[in-house]
Amino acid sequence: MRIVIISAASPPEPICAGRVHWDCAKHFAEENNEVYLISPYPSRPLGTNYLTDNCNKVTQVGKNFIHVNVNSFTHPKYNLYLRVFESLDFGIRSIRYVNSNIKDYDLIYVSPWAFIGHLMIMLLRKNKRALFIMNVQDLYPESFFIKINFETVIKILKPLHWVDRFIARRSSHITVVSESLKQVYLNKRKISDSKITVLHNWQDESEFLKPVIPKEQILEKYKLKAINEKFVYMYLGNIGPVAGVETIINAFGELDNKNSVMVIAGSGTNKERCRLIAERIRISNIYFLEVPLGLNPVVELQSIADILMLPILPVASNSSIPSKLIAYMFSAKPIITSANNLSETASAIVEAKCGWITKSHDCTEWAGLMNLAYETDKKKLDEMGRAGFDYAIKNYSKKQGLIKVNQLFQRLINR
Image 1 (cartoon, one colour):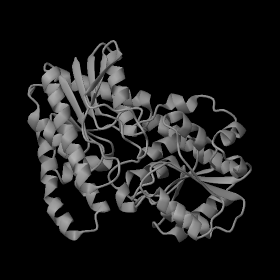
Image 2 (cartoon, rainbow, N blue to C red):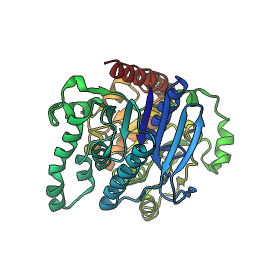
Image 3 (tube, one colour):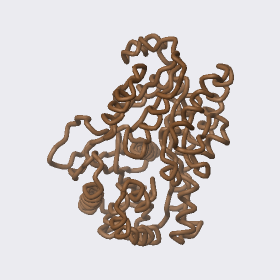
């Protein structure tokens, strides 16, 4: 087959979907298919300096794998209107490249920034005979509403779900990253069950199975020697407007135990605000870190945690599984989250028996569970962490994910 994958992100960006699409491209190339991966120049996380150019960059990755960085507009800092333009511009420029350079392909797997990018690619593609597979990482326009406080803007954007429905109906097939997303496309977008496949995002389990350097070396490497022998609560990921990191900082400030520390590792638009909160309530045993690019620093840092924190606005957890949850589970550490009890995030933690779920996104609720975790026997914590790891191997491993993608593509092509 000749396969085109259009992805809004790709390595070295630490975005789970970008790594998943790269894994897919590499896998299908190794299976003697001709694969083109189209993505923008890297721009995430916010503040990272990447080398970019004013033209499209074509890189031969392997014998059958070509990666194309298109020179489209990027805007990692959150702004609704500029994010919409980013999606629009990438959709147009990526399909223009495909139309001009990769005319005779069998399948196009489309995962740009939702969902205007999907629309542009669908409308502008010249090869109408090829299978058009729509990959959905999150629900739009609904996810916009979580970040918008203006009722007028929400009313204007609400009818856009009809655009998403149009794209879904015109696609050959749809892949979604969670069962809850599938239910939305079944019940609200009115798409038939046979046209939707749940393909969870994954992590490369081999990275978590490698021996980790001793804890003392990790502490020294990341300038954390002062936290040795302490009980470590850790958040690692994007510090953005829906992450809710401010809540766990306030909750940590309510704890009485002096033998614990909190590590906030990552970057994002709300990081400085979180620093100011910690200063205002005079928390001295909190550490803010930048995380180097790549999965290995994630593995190292999470290995020194006792408890991994997943503060998320309950409404924001309804449609998809955060990539942080998958990485947390592979680190074999207990997890505390504030995800909605009916969400797939909460279901995964309950099924795996690997953590606790708050009743609300209230810092007092968080503080209560953080104290409970601190008082829990070390052996019990280890058992919970291992249960999460076993669940992740079964449901979120790269090996299992690639098998499912391969089976799906072969089935659609054969049909």
